[in-house]
Length: 238
Image 1 (spheres, rainbow, N blue to C red):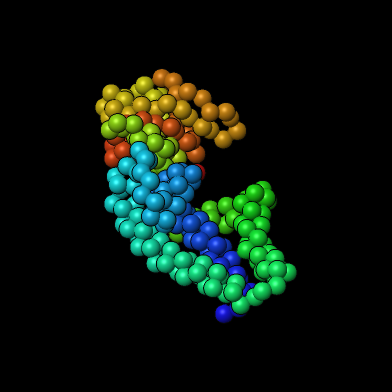
Image 2 (cartoon, one colour):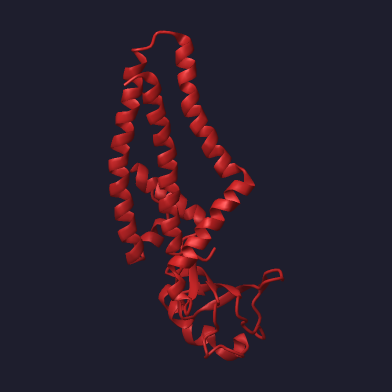
């Protein structure tokens, strides 16, 4: 293997590693994890860094996420071995070329790979296009679940969960009633903190707040109770 093929392979590995990271991040987002927290956990799992935070509890609390985490770790181990082999090939191949000019040209290949990743992540139009494709894919994958509301975990505090519930439809027991009339907090322990409504700024939930279709509610309470009360499932909803 000559130096150019080795560097090309190494560059492809860089791009593939980034693509795989984004792909597994997307899978975790489908389970309801916010993008940044999902990406951090995926990088930790793929690299085998073993860096744990309180956010890791979000993965352990879900059977679906635990299974996905196992797949991510196994995949990361196999892929890391491949990357190490490619890296060794790069340095072994450097011995075959003695001219400094060739070395410089050869290093342009990984630099080009890095530039491609930078453009994809930092150019707003390109990044927005990719995000739009992910949303469309998620909508198709979960089209059969449109009868359920969507819930996305934001954080865990003690035994409680801060989550965002997107109301695709309003449960009958809350439809047309004010927040006070629903007795949501008294009967379930769920506290509705914020309401995001299309065309309006997010506002604090009040006793006379009435839920509308399309509202995004920031709530705090027991996670299973939140899902049950709002007829919600984990879903790609950010």
